[in-house]
Image 1 (cartoon, rainbow, N blue to C red):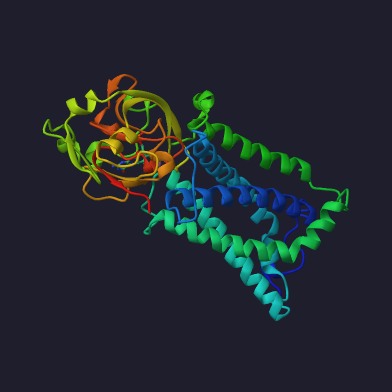
Image 2: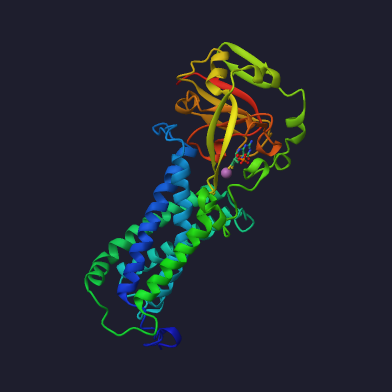
Length: 379
Ligand SMILES: Nc1nc2c(c(=O)[nH]1)N[C@H]1C(S)=C(S)[C@@H](COP(=O)(O)O)O[C@H]1N2
Ligand SMILES: [Mo]
């Protein structure tokens, strides 16, 4: 009956132990928890329900939480790999099902493994901007499968907590290890995770940018020294962005103003050092100069301290063609309709003639090629 991996002694490595699996499980659990919470936060910031308020300060908070999200997610790759290696002989346990509870537990492990792989592989593909293998909207899939993974993880932890506790309480493993010791293996996993972190985190931690050889983005590579996600050509806006008849429409309770570039430059100009913090984990700071959004709100009769603002792009379609600026950001003196980057007019790929830049916001909400600003009075 019991052949191949099913037979007794089919997995001779003495490196595997309950203790090893427990230690890897704890590390993976911590990384997953951090990744889940920072991911949930990012979701709330991008798509805020009515009860959720995200502050405009500190300026770089989202840059930090999203950098942490992507860094913990990437560090999970070797952890998850070795964890699966350490536990997969259980897949061939005999008898395959002992009871209804055992069957349910095995099914939940199946869900957990599938969901964890989906999250990690999908996250890496997204960071690499390789969407072909994902024929669905990445953000929505990543969000819902995260809940699936958390549910299955809670069941998993609940079932195995007593075993893990016991295994971690014992000091030394009973059998002498193979050539590689358990500590050696754990050290190797930690080193692999550390190396991945070191070679990617420079995409958001500027002093380490020279080491970011595995990161798809470098904070200093791109026109005007800043990376670009979507170019003016990709967005199909180049001609309209460069058209001298460009006007920024500002609409509010007192009416509408159509401002050409000269009119925008005639407003008081302000400069702010603010990061673009992309959800993909890269970030880069620019020195932006332009008109305060609150000044444009006041121009059309809105209340600069309470108004919510809709910012729309010249881009005709596309998920990121518009964003809503909540009152906390709209009233912030650092929130600009930027006309310049480092003292130069914006490069077309950075949103010429005008882009939104606000403190503590995800990159996807920093709308480029702004064409229309609509002031909404507080609800
Ligand atoms: N109109 C428009 N604005 C946009 C986008 C877009 O696709 N369309 N992409 C956003 C994303 S995902 C990011 S990270 C930033 C990137 O800004 P940068 O290309 O100027 O660095 O722009 C944002 N603004
Ligand atoms: Mo982004």
